[in-house]
Length: 331
Image (cartoon, rainbow, N blue to C red):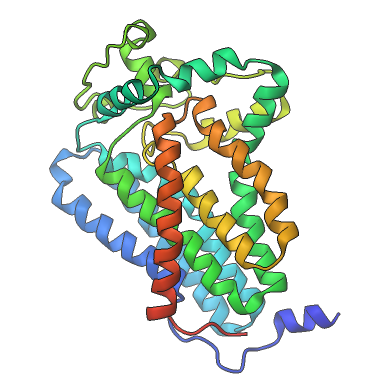
């Protein structure tokens, strides 16, 4: 009962303007809108992208209005949850944005071959094909969503004084990743290998596709565009992965792996929470996720490695930025 009263208690000093997480989204929205205007002659999906941005504005200002009616912890959480829910719109939007650039997969696949002497995205799932291995790695990959939501909820319920900063770091790391995805159009093995043919990949030939993906009328549900997901097709986590894949996957966002980078950020935040049980409970999922990214052929192995270093950089950069420029954390 005490917690419920605390949840809906009116704040003594309610925030009048947007929260840092909302300012990050607005900055990304404005920057990408300008980019769309500058490249409008190359686009056939302006209406779709405009609707994405309209939805983001509607959600943001509707929840801001709700908070102004009742400024409390609950409405604060709803504002941040609203921004997290919008990530499902912003991710496929990166594909619509980077279609104006030439595809770079041939470069990254060549680097993969040079570094490992093979394509781990193909070899890994072929060598370790036992159902238990498949399910564990697939579980790790789909745990991405519970991990960043879980650490956010932990801070909300037990470390509320750091909740705003925590969610800012998480959401800003997503948007930094999206900026990279826009300027580095890498589709990933599941799309590139299908487009050029596995016979070329097996022979070490990596054709330059130029603007192949940008010219497609893309439908992720059409099997002609991507390799079938590897793993145990009867597995529980395989079906979860299949559902999320069909819901919003696009030939974009391969380098660096945002699954890995955001998970690294989450692990830093879990450690920072001072609750070691939280950190060690998350750790096995984080390790499985790292290997799962290229096991399911969503990424090259170098994407996962780059994602690790990107996550470390993002955590320290965004923590410094929040402490330096954003409002002080409130209890």
